[in-house]
Image 1 (cartoon, helix red, strand yellow):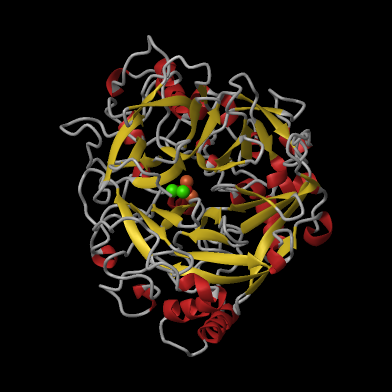
Image 2 (cartoon, rainbow, N blue to C red):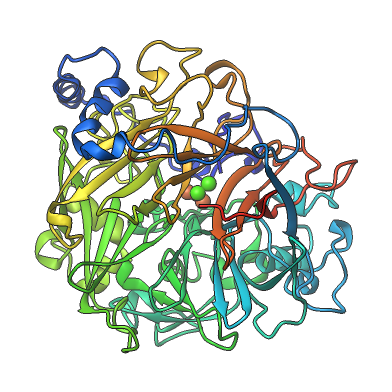
Length: 637
Ligand code: FEO
Ligand code: CA
Ligand code: CA
């Protein structure tokens, strides 16, 4: 969800962050010492080289680029950039084409009715593709290709557009919402360049907010995980608000639970959840989903431990539709964006993860055991150490281990459950909303999209940690976002130390001439705001998806709809590849087995009522997955 800001807008139209802040207002960050300290550190960081943050930050980039890299071919993109626009369709470069094989409500089995928003029931929704697709990946089993796609949330005004209130009004309405969340597993096949769903495939599966899950890792069985329905604290029901994703070397899919808090409420409106739950934004008011009315476990006054069982990374075996998904508590509990999994040089598994909320942290998990192909992998996401990032202003940083000794917390289970509190305890760097993390396949270098943070330098995070301007978060009231990257010392992802710089500081050089103009690789022809999904292709090019302000006016004039760009880490050049339809975000991407198709997620077109994508006319807009191919049939990326 992007940054939609007005207290006068209905709850429907504001982001989860805005909702959390309305319920739990942050204090202004007015401490005099802190303001002075941040100003000094910012001056020190800029070093007086140039007045504008972006340009000087990028200056340090050159030292990280190997001499040969920048002078290679003129560009490696293979396409001419497309112009920003506000059309209610997809725009791709000349020589490319697109179609949309999968949409919200498409049946996965025969005999299930085709999509009709006004007659869609919970039962039908549970047998069809979920809503608001986000992260995804493709798995191959012999000659079969299976797409696994997160269904993050629903827009109530679209899902319940058949109700006068635009909200769930019946029990089936609320159950339909639960069934629209989760993960869709869908076999797909290509006929003459067009992809389609293979109905009745043995792989097809819907995982929803009611699917049984196994809790694993340090938090499993802990008292804080026990509920009336599960006195063992080892089994939970469902996954929801699955944002970005990950993929393990052993062929499983990771679905990351992000804004899990917005589904809990209390029949007793005066109920005050614990401080630990409030750190995650859990309150007596939900976000308009009404799940507690049909499923008491979402009533936090009656079942205060239930929210402790959400906010994890969920491992799913996409090739076994009977398998039980596993919540991996060792990877911590926060508003998980995605999970970037690597095999380190020594064989340990490293998972990089962002916590997407203003002023929250960036994490890394390092397994205790070592990966060996064919050997058991169950322990690798169960036992290990969680770290949180601390950036300094001079281009270096350090991973701080979260242990009972460093955090003062009682045991590993509490760290796994109250991970944000652990990060605060060790003084982690408060970030500008860490979204996706992506690892460069051609070198030991990792990128994270920091999407935006209007509170930077102005308000603390939900835990009261200050958000000083500086380091990788160099702009007060950051409306445009940036992408930070780091290189572990010695190419060892398990190492404590790293070097960092900014790959890009987004901005609008046609409107601003200060640091809001962006870094030197941002210009009138490629400008954008709010980088979110970032994914490397096999050549080491970085695909950048946006979820930002699409007003196309004022600070955002000329930037058009949300979009997808490609950046070259070696040269810093960025080109726009795709523009989405009105009021969508572009999120999630993967390749077909032959790499001739890229699948791209289009989420919430018309979230404010101004799109009829993809069917046009007066149709209900639908999220879905598009397939993009080259006219000449060549591979992409
Ligand atoms: Fe679901 Fe942080 O985006
Ligand atoms: Ca988003
Ligand atoms: Ca996102």
